[in-house]
Image (tube, rainbow, N blue to C red):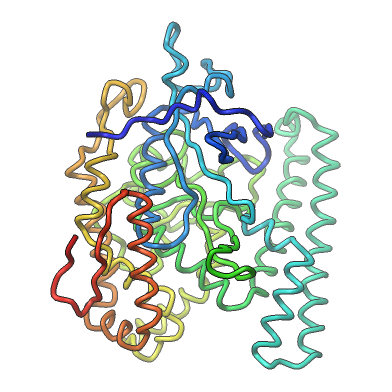
Length: 453
């Protein structure tokens, strides 16, 4: 039986959040069942909301951290639903039937951009990492001074940007090309400073970015990291360690068949070649082509697949080193000489290898919605509907494609050389599946002959 949306009728607004500079969708903070959620009105349709939640669930199956997401309705007390706020609005329609996306709030989570701008925390991280690596005090001081300088430049540009925006309320600057150019310039300075600050993070935290990026490829997430360095960030899982940061992905609105602007990926090429908003200073990648605008069974030949992701400039902050390693591997035609650099990708390949296919099948059979009466794919056209069997095949084939970058022998070798880490990963996956499916799965080592429930 398919799962239905959860009624948030009893929810209470805790804190309002307007449709600000970093968000393209209105959201409210709602307390429901003694838990705090950020509830997002997806604007476009119920199906868009449903698929975003489903893709977040698929991501979490790998054992990496993703925000817990619920598909909910009865949200008409939180949002004003009309033709401007819902693409599927019709006169006389039951407002309580509009679906929204509820993401459970993790109190310690910070988007990557906010994380990098937290001066006290960043200085502590820089110092702790340097001490662990037995680096000299002079190096620590130099790194701290560099960070503070980058942050000062960011704050100066941000202050100047705020002054410009105050002079031109309601986006009146869009009619003034010279002012818009100034805004883009300030945003570019801010983006560049975030990139440079990101380089100061210790390798362990940067590896978290890589692991989440590689799993995002399974879902073809077009919006893993935006130009404000949002959608991925860090939190502290106090159940495991009181001070250790872990990566978390919190937005899946560009995953699966979903493209930009409520369109399917197949329909999104023209929109993908544009910036998310006029104020965005980053040009779209020239390598992205119309054939890349899909959610197909196979991954691109490249390990990073950077050329197949639109608006990919922010990703370079995460994967620049991996691109260089990939080029070296291509020249050497040998993975073994680059095991250290490939550890995040190899770990993801291992996670996908031990994740049972039947768990994916069970989840999608229970959750996938394909143009049902209550969840039309879109208001007017259902030609891009994908049935349950097809979406299962796509996810499984993409999973297999990533595994094949390395091959069974390489992944088994990684498991043998990282016995404790491999065992921890299998526990993480089993725990994630239990939370997601309320069902116990046994996660077997790669060396085991089969996977069983």
